[in-house]
Amino acid sequence: MFLRIDHVGIACHDIEEKIAFYESKFGLRVVSREVNEEQGVKEAMLHIADAPGGGSYIQLLEPLGPDTPVGKFLAKRGEGVHHVAFGVPDVEDALRTIGGEGIRLIDERPRHGSMNSSIAFLHPKDMGGVLTELVQAAPEES
Amino acid sequence: MFLRIDHVGIACHDIEEKIAFYESKFGLRVVSREVNEEQGVKEAMLHIADAPGGGSYIQLLEPLGPDTPVGKFLAKRGEGVHHVAFGVPDVEDALRTIGGEGIRLIDERPRHGSMNSSIAFLHPKDMGGVLTELVQAAPEES
Image 1 (cartoon, rainbow over the protein chains, first blue to last red):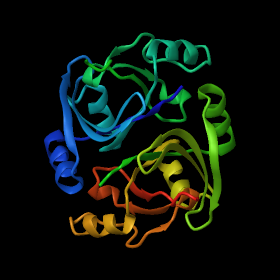
Image 2: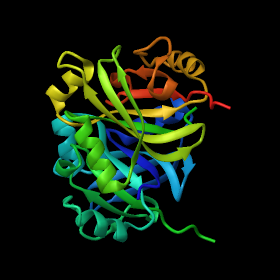
Image 3: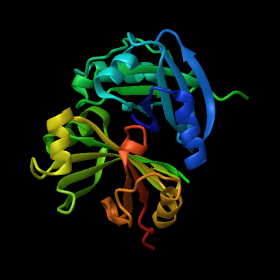
């Protein structure tokens, strides 16, 4: 079901500072920046590698305010890994399969993710403490 | 410098239970099991994908006792993501470069990792709260 590690989502206080850090120290480059009002977060994707069905990235997350999910995470845990995302061929199919396995779905239906992907989150309490995201990459434009 | 997301290391109380979970729910397969006495941990690697210069895995970590690094992590944070590992072409070269960038190295020299890899850890305080591992995969046997 999993095609790749799509990304590791890292919560931070200052996304511009962290982008500059990864660019200057590790030579990574930003391939996407977005503000996701629905999730209350500013996002940047740093490209690591091409990978089966999509790519592999570091995703940086800065909350739009303290009352957002990432804002609350930072207040409780401090900066660090917020979630892990795995690429799947079809996120609706994956949700159907996984929901039938007794794993609670945070999203019953796919929603919009970075770079026009379709995404859904699985509950960390059923995933060994790991907030887990499924990602179906956008079809490649031709 | 980074070739791939090599693995995400997940700390757990019962590695056999978590292996069974990922095998049965997601169809992953274990490609390596090791006890690393030096790090005080029992490890299993679950294969996600082949990736540039190596592979991509979920690494499950069960501490050998409460006074080990992973044991202390579990007591403090509970089960969840322990570290993120990036594949590099040459871990000694990478350490030289990164050490010169003012990032504290937990390992000044590479040590033994899963599946005969060479690994080194970077300090989470200099990595935005992310315990970061560098991995040079073992040369393929021919």
